[in-house]
Each structure stands twice: as C-alpha cells, then as structure tokens.
Image (cartoon, rainbow over all chains, first blue to last red; front, side, top):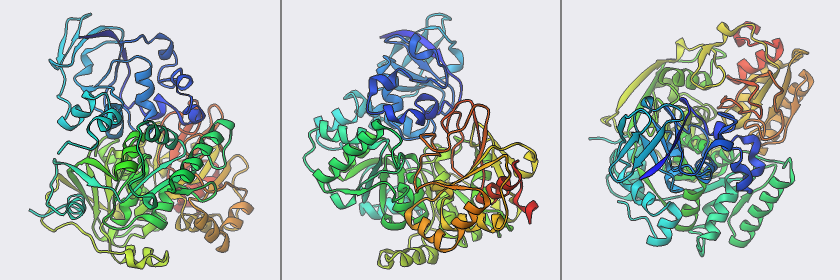
Length: 165
Length: 417
C-alpha cells in the first residue's frame, strides 16, 4: 500500500512544463535538474513534494517531447505514481521504462492536497480525505512486465531480450 | 481483411501478418539520438554492460539541439557523444550538419524502414513511408544494443485530403487544421495515414511537414504511401536504388476516416499555449508579433524558404519585428544560398542562424523576452517553449510567417499580394 498526498495539476501538462528546454544544460546533472521538476506548471511543487506523494493530472498528461528526463525527475522527487485521466504515448512508455507507474483513473474526484492510498495489486486508489474509492485501468501486460522489473534496463539485464509477445 | 500502411510495413518487416492491437518485437533499421537525449542513452547503454552495437552503420548521434553549444555543460555533453562515436564506430552528425529529422529524410530513411529516435518528431520520416516513431533514451539505448524494439501495432485513422490547395495555403495549414479538428490527443497511440488527391500531389517537403506534426495530435506515426514523389526525392539524393513502392490495401480497416477538402483550407494559425488552439490567420489580424522564426524540422526546407522569399523579395520587415531564419540542414542552407534566398532574408532585415534546433525549444538563440510574442514555423507552442514561460508562441506556415514579418502583426499572406 502506497500512501501520500495528491498534487493536482490540470489537463495538457506538457514535458516542457515538467522539464523545459531552457534547462537542457542540466540534463547531465540530474539532482540539479530535479530541483526544477514541474517548475513551469507549479513553481512551488519541487519544494513541497515529499517521498511517496502523488502527481495527479487530467487529460493528455506528458504530451510533447520524448525527453525521458520528465518521468525520471518526477520519480527522483519521490513521487510514487502519476494518476491521470489520460496520458500521452511517449511519456507513458518512458515512465514505465523508469519504473514510475502511470495509472488511468477518474482524477476529477481527487482534490489537491488529499491523502491517497494506492493498492497496485488490487488496482485501487482510495482518497482518504473525501472517502472516494477509485479503480484504475490495468496497465497493459507488456508494460506491466517491464514495470515489475523496475524499468526497461533492469528488465533487459534480467531477460537479455524482449519476452513480451 | 487488407492492411493499413502501419500494418503492412510491420508485416513485411516481420515476414508474417500482424494487425492492430498485437504486441510485436521488431528489428530496427535505424536508431538515433540527439544531443539533449543522447547523453542519457549513452550512460544507460554503458551502465547496462552492453558489449557492442547491433549495427554501427545504422546507429546515429546528432548534435543539433545545441549547435553550436551555448554553454560549458552542453559542450561537455557533446564531448561524451563524440567519444561514444569514436569508441563504438557509430555514425555522428556534428554541429553544422543540421536537424536530425531533416538529415534522416535526406540521407537515411527508406520506404518500409522501422526507425526509432530519441526525439518525438522522429515521426517525420513517415513522409517516406517509414514506420518511424519517437521514444525515450532507454528505449533507444536498448535498440542500439539489440537492434530491435517492441511495438503495439497501432490502429489507424485515415486522413483523406481531396482537391487542391489554394495559393499561399500549404501543408502546414492542413496539419494545423487537422490538429484543430481532432485535438492534441485526437490520435493518441494511433497511426495517422494520409491519402487522397492533395496528398498524392504533395511535395516531399510538404509531406515531411505533415508527418512531423502527427505527434502533436498524439499520434505514434504519420504515414504516407510512397509514390513517384518519394522516388524522385531519393533519386535527387543519390539513393534511387532504395526506392520501393508501399501503400495500404484498398480494403484496410480504419478506426475512422476523416475527409478534408484542401480547396477550402485557408492560412491557419495555432495560438498560445496549445497546438490545437486553432484560428484562421485573417481572424487574428492586428495581433502584435515581436519575432518571426522561419525554420525547424517542420518548415526549414528549401521549398519553405522559396515561399517566404517570394513574399519578402525587395521588401523590408517591420522595424518592430525581428526575423530569424534557421535552415533545417547544411544542404538546405547551401541550396538556399545558391538560389539567393538567404540574401533576400538578410536584405529584408532578417538574421540567419546555423542549421539546428536551438530556437525552437528555447535552448538558445531567439529566446523571447517577457510578454513578447513569436510567430514561428515550428511545431510546438507550449508555455515556455521558446525559453520563457512569460512569452507567447503562434505557429503558422512560412507564407504566413513572411507576411507577418513585413507587417509586424499576424497577417494572412494573401493580403500582401
């Protein structure tokens, strides 16, 4: 069971809002880059987020660039999962490749600052603050196999190849 | 049941019939990174203990986003990439050569290829009939080492474009219009497949513009069938033998088909801060623009420059507007110089940047001031895109960009005839 606080964001949180191009010079200095996570969406987020907390978005979360640094620094900030109504393709794949769960559920029912409990195995999210229980869409099988190994590189190191078909 | 272009390319590559929804592991014909995603790929590759590249001739590192580098950190990233190329023998395209997607289109992509790149606009090569898509640094590191990757075979939305474009209405206006119709997530996970009379007649340059922006609707692919235009493109680049005909089956199954009449399209603009925030240029008349940016993998090609030059010839841009021009590749730059376009831009008051991506993503060159607005021929206008979250980016065609540079306000190019 994962427990933490919800940090609520709106629709269309682009990878530019998560990790802008103007900070490209920090991409080889990840601890420094991580201090700017989601800066252009909420400049106070990086200072307030605590290990275990949740990023909660709306539709089309992570649209835009292929920069894997986006899910990478969200994970480095200690975020245990990203909960969204829908997610952009490359961000989804990158997040799973980095061992960061992205879970599709009706995030309209979650408010900013609510305490959440996530049960990955049961597929449920409980909003402790307002008592709402949500179920999330199962992660596709191929991606779950990668997520369960902690990401793509650990998956390949273990299996030596893709064993997804 | 017949096959869509996406299903056909994958089926031919795998030597068996595959259809939408299946998970497949496919060989990769070309894998590449650029200088802002590549350092992470190199570190993942090295840290994973991979011994050798699957195919060093089809592994490419592009130094294009910070070209030339604006600071010590990015210069040090370049050192890492050059050293990886030396150690592994892979291909490197260094500063000055141009934007990865343009060079892939000029020198590398072949109809029927499977291409993965650590850059979302890898979809651009779909213009040549290649199954080309963007991925992250780890996925490409694995493709470097194993020469393969996994895909979910995507469902397809067919875009059928009939009739002919009006004068000063371009492929850019078509793709902006389409994204406005279906939204920035209207094609998430899907293949966008283009066809119809206007598409058959479309130049390679226009196809590259359309395919490039497929990802702005969330698509995994932006695919064109190959035809005589593809063959001519390859022949001009000394790659005639790489042509092969590839097209969807007549009885392919499409999730849906969208029909667009090219003759009804007008110069179109995307407003801040979302690509699907679409309006006609004529309805934005009077909106003040501080900088016009002509270039990028979307619209930095010779045909784009020819169109802009035809509007700017013997004219001066507005004293209240800057014009910056960045060719998509060295080849484009040299051809545009020979054709006299660069002289036209410079005499009009523009400044010319080296081939590369810098200004488009706000990395360097042409960064906007607080409250400023840029009208750009690029593909994205997210908040902060051009280096400043307190600025505004409008997207449009090279014709609209040139007309806007002259007036200093958003202008429909048909008004400056």
